[in-house]
Image 1 (cartoon, one colour):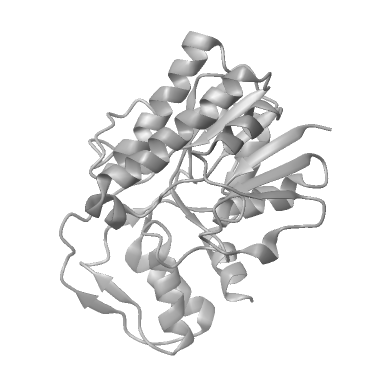
Image 2 (image 1 turned 30 degrees about the vertical axis):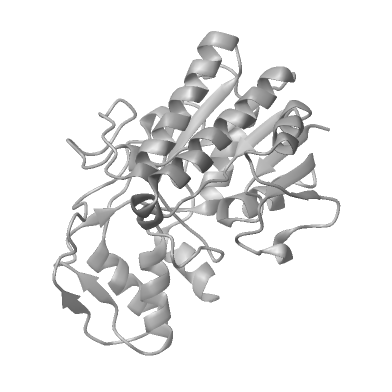
Length: 300
């Protein structure tokens, strides 16, 4: 039975990875408890309240077969206010785990990056060789973590792989997360019978991907060694306009109300969706439709 270390295992993605893997693997979770999702820890999972920058985290990385690194400071707004704190967590935390993994004998180090590394798209859909021009310290810190992972593979032979998720959503999503928050906000207003509020004309697009598809990709990568040192987009490969998202949520709730439109938000990216042809090569095939994913969140 493989020993798997999941950082951020109480968070949105980490907790679903724990759900999937705890029956087939010996799972250990590191989390600073900032998400406080203790209800998501199955029996038999070893849980450490630790910072990813700590010596304990480093030691744990050395003692496991697989490290899945999802923990991060994810708030773009917070990163803009305090870039140093963001870098300390996302860059030095990742480096600490990589150093631990280098001292062990691991089979795989899977790093969660972000589509935020791309910044404003120069072309669509966005593939992995698209220029990386992050627009926030958060995006820069995730890109820096990527570079360390690929360097550790080249310099030390560490079996790393990086994934760039697009807009992840799930019933456990944090409404303050800027990448899934729009879904939470729309659903919250729909529950109250109020119209969704769209900033702009609603034509802006995003690639909303279910956490279950993200987990599928991670499981594929755990046993895939041909692409060590590589980076993969993880999305649906389909664009969804914000107006269509709002209408889909209203349809799921059975509401016949008009969407409310407000002025564009400064700095908002107009269009972003993924090219996942590279991920297809290892068998990745997103299965959850947006409508089905929304129904799961709503509880229908």
